[in-house]
Length: 436
Length: 121
Image (cartoon, rainbow over all chains, first blue to last red; front, side):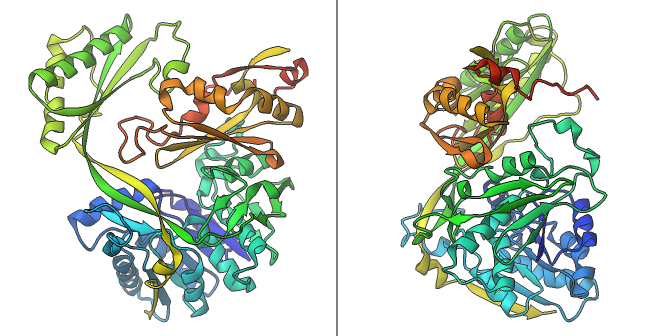
């Protein structure tokens, strides 16, 4: 069973997907939803009720369709975002415009729990509230013959676990196998991040870094797998690149929570087989192996933000940048702009490292970054309105930002986790299969 | 004993979940892993990040892959879509921890595999 990790976020590259398909994968699986992505999609849906899914979905479909039609590959994605029904419609439309017929498209709905906010004690006026679904509805879709499966907020790793359950017939209480499938999913869900992308070791030795590959997992029916990449592609698969992805954003590695099983990532072994192949085996479930709840995310408005970046050269670049930012803050105060929070950062000095940075040097240039939060959009814009004055009336030698331009105010969103009884959500999950 | 900066001794990767920054350190052999276990405690990491991390820091061990995991609460200015930070996703926190200096056995320092620097393209 060969799974291809075709996407790690909304905005990921498309070319490596062609390499996966050409190399031969039984499933092309595209993971489109980071926590931040739901917030972006929510803004889309606010503008247009027919949006709220990742808009490059039809492009992925177009890439995969020849292989789907040949019966070589099935396509699974959570690109439905916060509007899987609209995404399903877009997919059916795209398939028809490609002149395709005889393809079964499944849409999974039911992760949206906004309508039950009071029952779940969620805040009023939530912009979205979604539970992370597990593999079950996707397995149901595959069992019904679906060749394309579109979901909303399904947990990343569960997208990959589902076809393994479908293919190998794992029982829902075969927890060690489910845990092994979750590990495979977790390793593939960030596309190039397991094949040399973001690698903190000798990243400069990545072969052909312009053509970094996306990963393939070749999985046995006991859940053990070999992680590899398509032939004649860039990047690398080594013990090091795989373990960096293994622990990425997992919190306690001995208890990695997925909706389907709690996996113990400290139980497994990684073996570097050479030639861009790493074997992962021996994964066990944690004890206890399941939970009674799904995790969810609820999103509420949190005001507006604006931002300005001022660039100054040596000498005394930091002092000038600090004076420039102080000028903006003072002007906002004098103009009576109600700013609720400020953030000052100095690129070239310590914008990222804060007080961990050894400050015993004079930087050749500094970008002073000022960000602010206000309750309303108009106020956020008013602070930035004073930046121009600094051109002739501020500290000396301010430079332009090239073609960077000024960022317009953007809405801030608070996203908080919640936990909801699995039964309550399962009762509203539906799988709709439509033949194009 | 020898003093060494973590950048020369181990790899790091970090990411986010809500307002939590999630950071891993990777050793290249058992001896280096033991040194990290002794030196890079949750308390030291909390102190290192100072104003960047307002909440607690928890440490987890993954000996099977010679890694330590740090879960840092209150580390992202309220979480990515709410944060005013340039690094609202905590992607740089791994690098920030690599700035820490630790005392390790001479042999561990001598065997440190990450001293090489990339050439400028």
